[in-house]
Image (cartoon, rainbow, N blue to C red; front, side, top):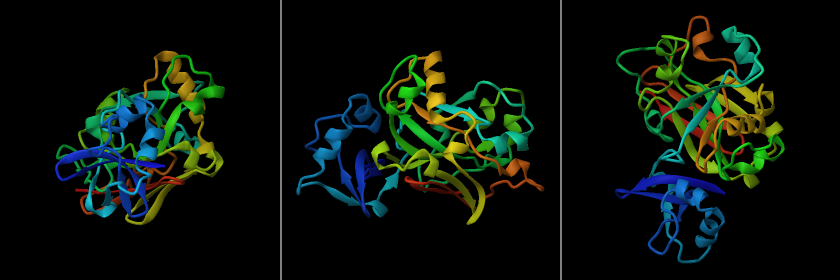
Amino acid sequence: MKLVSFAAQGATQVGIVDGDDILVVTDASWTGGTTLRALIERDELAAAKAHVQGPATKRVPLAGVTLLPPVLDPPRIWCVGVNYHDHRKEVGRDETGHPTIFTRTPQSQVGHGAPIAVPAISTDLDYEAEIAVVIGKGGRNIAQADAMGHIAGFSCYNDATIRDWQRHTTQWIPGKNFEGVGSFGPWLVTPDDMPPLEEIQVTARLNGQVMQQAVATDMIFPIAEVIAYLSTVTTLLPGDVIATGTPGGVGAKRTPPVWMKPGDTIEIEVTGVGVLSNPIA
């Protein structure tokens, strides 16, 4: 099931993608949550799927709406840094026994198709292709063996970064949180419709050229371990987003560096999810 948050006719709604259409969940007859986060919190994903099975289901063309980040108002956005061996080597970092964690704000991301703007203060806008997971069942001290059962769905994430601001200090958060610099989407795919982890590939294409590519099992700290680690620190909440790290090939470590610039198009593809595409403005 592909769950999508979208804007149409001045309203923000939730739907399920069906081919070239969206089956509208949050229509006038729906009595449940009105955002994807609310559906996840209230354990209403199965009910949402059942709601759109009838012949009276409202359909809207996918091409006629504005796609938004799947979870518009996540409690937290957790990001894992340097989580692929090839990326660790290209940035010259030593191996560590624990994942590197930082955070992003909801304001730092846009949805599929929306422009990512190069801020006037810098030209060092870099791409980072990532697999995102959204927590469905919250919890504290989640066992690694149980962690994958806490996932509501998978998505694509572009942890786009203003590199010079990231390097201001040893703390990365400024370079990761310029408003509207980064993207999430195009939708959330439930685990039952995803292939096994060893078949999930993440790819970045800049103007059609492959810049990054890896499979989920290339991660230094697997998704289940990241979930278990974070849940040791704090109670994970339904709707929390986890961006699981980027592989090697980032623009900053190319010779010469490759920065995204106005007129470019960046695509992030995750097997089983699809393509998150954004123009650079």
